[in-house]
Structures are given as structure tokens and as C-alpha cells.
Length: 267
Image (cartoon, rainbow, N blue to C red; front, side, top):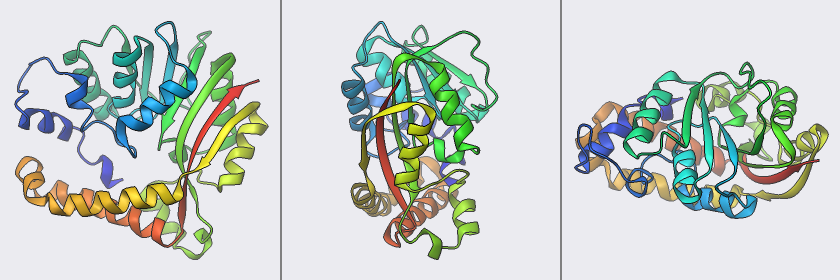
């Protein structure tokens, strides 16, 4: 995916704000750039509030990217987190940012395929994930694995893409290539997959209209900020990100995709 074409771009962002070389960083500064989902830390704060995350909790973030949500949760609550990410380059940069934020004692970055990772007897109080699970194949298998990794009564917070009402009218092969969608399903099938795996649904909000508006505004602002972005990251990365941002807007506009926010509890 073109959104993930340059992991070290985060380092360039913090350097451009005057935090060069090995300078310590503040989560409040980094979180302006390290959140790859919609509404940034506002969404992460909702997870904290809705799941009741506290300093005694042990949390797994699946598809963590740079680990932005994990760092924010750790800084806000003192909880311990494992930021699990498939791409080594994102894990490496994320771990460096976490170290510079002084949070390595709370956030552990692990590079692994979620379907293959072995957590042994370890169980988590919460599992969280933002715009990542639809990338993973074998939905029934990974949903069951999430449940098994939670302690009884443990909770789950997910934001993810779904198929939209006109998904069948889209070029599915191209959409899969652009979004790397391996297990995208409808809103109702998403909820059913969690129920089938042994979760009690706390809520399952349709985020489609909200995210359509958000991504449309994001694209407009990105274009307006082109000169400043290119000065930091160059033309090639601007082109890659703009391509992805435009495709997301296109797919929301054509109702090829939708969005869901779910909170659930292991029963």
C-alpha cells in the first residue's frame, strides 16, 4: 500500500519540527504524525474511555504501524502495551520513537504476522486495532485468536474498513491491490464474525459517513499543504500518499467501502 511506502518519513517529520538526532520527544508532538487511522488520538482516547483502560492493564495492539496508539495509551494511562506490526521497518522506527519518548518500559514493539505469533500463556486485558484487521486473511481464524488472547471478560476495540453497499460494482481486483484488503466484509458480517467467535457486542457503530467526510477533508488539506510536505518528504512520497488518499475518497464516494467501530467483550 502506498500509505506505507516510507517508514522513516515519521523521523523526517519530527526532525522538521526541530527534534533532531537523538533529542527526547513528547508524545503530544509525535502523535500529530504517527496516527495512521482516522481522527488520530481522539479515536484512541475513545478506546481508553470506553474500555476503561488503567495502569494495571496489559494490552495488545494488532497492526500497530509505528505504534502511535500504543504510545498514546501508555503515556495517558501507564498501561503496558505490545505493539505488534508485520512490517519490520515500521516496527524499527516505532521502537526508536518510543525510546525517545521515554516509554520503552511500557511499550514493546514486536514484528510478527498475527496469524503466526505465539504468545504462550500470556493473556491480555484488552486488544485494540485501527484500520488493520481487514488486511489479514482468514477472518474466522484471527478473530478466534483475538478472543483466545483475551482474559475472560477482556475487551476489544476495533476500527476497520468494511465493504460498502455497492462493493460488488467496484473493480474488486484493483480495490484489493490498492487497499491490500484480504478479509473485508460487510458491517453485518463483521459483527456476526465477532459474535460467532464468542464476543458480546457492546456497540458496533457505522462510521462510513463520518470517515467519508474525514478523508475528503484530509485530501483537500493535503493538497493545500503540498509545498510544505514536499519540502520535508519530497515529490515521490507526496505522490504516493496523495494517490492513496484520493483512492480512499473515491471508494467511500462510490460506496465500495464503509467503516465500522466496534467495542466487544469476551464471554
